[in-house]
Image (tube, rainbow, N blue to C red; front, side):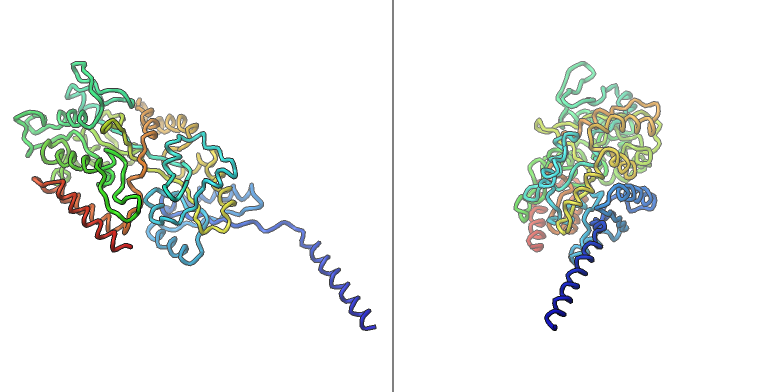
Length: 462
């Protein structure tokens, strides 16, 4: 009797388990993917609603994945993300983020190449140089191009006309044509010659004249505006202050050459504003020295080509090719992308979200939210035409050189990782301020001192 009762109870238990199993046949809970915003654009209030709209559209079209938006103010975003990573509570996707933001978390990013292969993700709509821009040695493919900010020469056409000089080359590979019709390679030597002719003192003498008064300059020929020593070095060639081993300080030969060329431009040839001249009233424009109208050429990024950055200038200007050094052109690049952290518990689903965000339709919305130039080649023609008509109506600007500059992006990037990032930054900025404000230095010796100091900083960071 007892045996029969136990059998009956067992049968009832099995039946109830089967019924419960049948009753749980509803849809599975979606995988949650967290999207962290704050290392770059996207943390100002005007972007909140548009970003949430992208999230809502994704969630409405996907049952298996729920995208969750986390916006953190930029002032605390770095500390917040570092805390989350350390606590094992890292988000899945982070972005938009530039190279500096990405490399502040070196080693934390997932190599996307296996997922690009698994999902057969089509990269043909991106310039190969831009795809390679996100490939980091020993770490892999850390991003897919999204929004880019190439650099190039921006010049004041009125000042060239006034000096009876031809404009810089509109396209890469073209020579500079002197007024007498002779041609010269558009390189750093030619840039220097042109810039000296465009540097003028209060008496109207240019910097090539024996009567030139370097104490009364009223117009300068050239400047690498709004960058740091790494950006100035990269003007001559891509490089890094740390060797591939991650612990050895170095100064690339191209950077030495660029720094010495710039120092001579400050204190010998006087075609670049040095520290004292940099603060002069005649160079204070709404968009820095160039928008003052008293600086003939700058090397800058796409983000400067905007009324809110350049300012409402009353003179003609245009864009031209970056000059070469030793036959090589390097147009430093600023770029934003989205990365997936290694701590993601659902990397495949995170990559599915990434593919959605980088699709042409959604990428167009996101680029509009953050600004910048779309990295997809198929989107650039319409984008530049629309952008030009909207922001500079009636002006025929050389947008082709913006697209062409992508092929010369610096890799390694000038904003890439360095040991003890902030201390290293402080030291090289101290070095540069000394050069900009002190004549008659032995620049090569000062670079050697910097190199020794950087190695000390790197060693202490191990």
